Length: 313
Ligand SMILES: [Zn+2]
Image 1: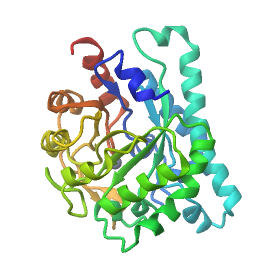
Image 2: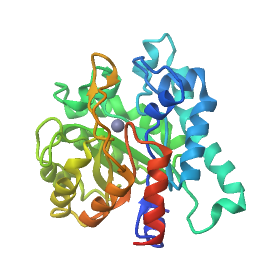
Image 3: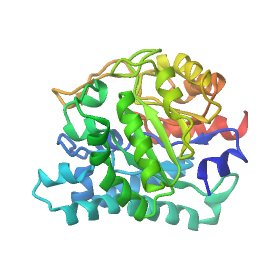
Image 4: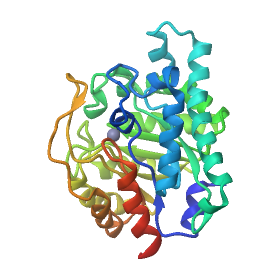
């Protein structure tokens, strides 16, 4: 069963969750580390479970797992062997499943909504490099090298029981094409593919979003396409461009509009966009029907989106 279709059959908007890593930092966790939120899979898994639970409570229809930066290669730099790394990647799914099951076990939480699902994060190759490459692309890797990088984690996330793969913050066309080829090879579960963009026309490496979407949207494994971790101000234009070349559901979960400094491994304190959740109405109007938040967004932002998405539209 495709969880996107089953929710959009009943509701006009599927509510995606908000930031995981920056929300954990807001709660006092130190993530200044190459493994970022994946570090907490090792050290404080209960905190991850709690953030997932809080997003469900705020109204999210799905949780995106803490596997964005969790890779065999990344964990091996920490001295973990392949088996230990794969166990942590599985654990990222289990934490989200546990939070979802706990949330759904309470009948009072079921009113007026669908059972939430678990979207396993597949971060880009650039996230493993941990130098901000997901905001630039230009890795110098071939499609088949990128397939080799993504294969073991993707297989593990599927085995662990994820409902969907969230391929996210993809900065370039070649990586999206590698992912689609891999999905076809391993006969994947449903997937969304989400690009990170640098303006209202181009993905971060420089190709036009419209061209990237056109190249990958036909795959039967691609259930939705869109944009995440991008400034909210570019979203209406980007959604409009994607809509021209696909009939598939469009998703967006922008960041708060602040900018990330890879040298500091921190976000610049740019003024936060006022009422992210209210601004999200414009993305719905532009044609997006899966809507949430990326870095620096909070459960409160998701509560606002769920509020209008389930009542007024
Ligand atoms: Zn982000």
